[in-house]
Structures are given as C-alpha cells and as structure tokens.
Image 1: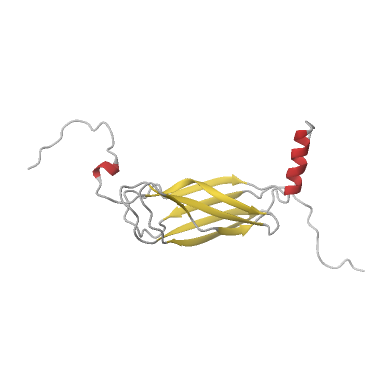
Image 2: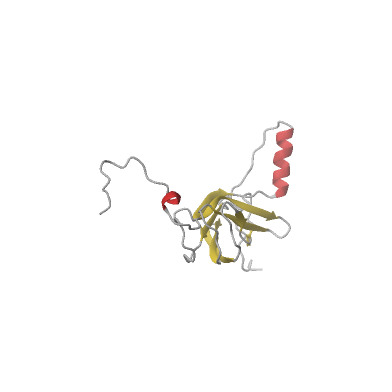
Amino acid sequence: MPPQIRGPVTHDPDPQVLAPPYPDLFAYPSFSVAVNHPNRTICLSGFISNVGNARVRQSFYVALGITYVRFGVTISSEKIVRIDDDIIVGERIATPCMLQNLIYLDEDPGAYYTFEMIVDVFNDISELRSSNNRHREDGWYFLNPALREKVNKAIDQDADFQIDISPPISQGSGSTGE
C-alpha cells in the first residue's frame, strides 16, 4: 500500500510536471487582421502555440468566427480550417485567413466586430488541458481611409474636430407617383 499524504494541499501542481508527454494547443491571445480597402474585405488569422511537453503530430481543426452588426442586424460567419502542421513544443503558427466584408464605422456606427477562435474544435488532439483553446476579442472597428486622413490632418494642425457617425438616412424605394 502506498503511503498516504496528510495535511492540506497548499498549491495546485503544474499539469505538465505530473503528466505524461502530451501537446497542449494554446489559442494565442492575438489576431492578425489584414484590411483590403479597395476590395472592402478583412482577412482574419489566429495564432496557435504548442505549450505542452510533446510535439503535435496529427491534423486538427480550428474554428474562426467573425460577428458584426450592420444597421442593427447581427451577422455572424464561421470558417473551419484544417491544420496539418507538425507543431513542436514552443512553436507558434498562424491559421489560414478568413475573409469577411469590411464595414466602416463612419458608415454604420454599430459596425463593431468580434473575432473568435476555437483550437482543436473536434478534440482530435489528446492534450494536457483544453481550457486554453479559445480566444475572443470584442470592439474592433475600421474607419474609412479618407476619414482617417481628415482626422490625422486635424490632429496635426491641432484643430478641433468632430466626427458625425450617426446612421445614414434611409433612401426609400418605390414610385414617386409621377
């Protein structure tokens, strides 16, 4: 019979110290967002690190999500990407990009974006822990380059500047009766 340990446990042991060799996929707390103004798109990529004590040697899937509001309507989209990389301990990789429409805040004052990522969404990898497989960022927004130039010019001139981001007046459709 093994000896029993008596007394209170004063700290939680590090799972890597007690565990056999397992990878640990980590949704790195950052996104890469490439803005393409001429095409009015954004390209979202997430980052994944292996913080475990063994190499990732098999494919797994990552869910990327983008949610934004367009004139009061919530629009969400998701892309599942397959990662085939062999990820060594300590390595960080980027996911493939997810494209989404670009809406400027000065066109719609509710056009704030939320970006999300879930690593190993189908639990293909045996990991030390999965509690670190999610990352989310709220409050991203984009300004029209012409407006940004105007703001920068006002700042450079130390001038007062006010931005009107009220919603545009809807242009009704239908006949005018003429």
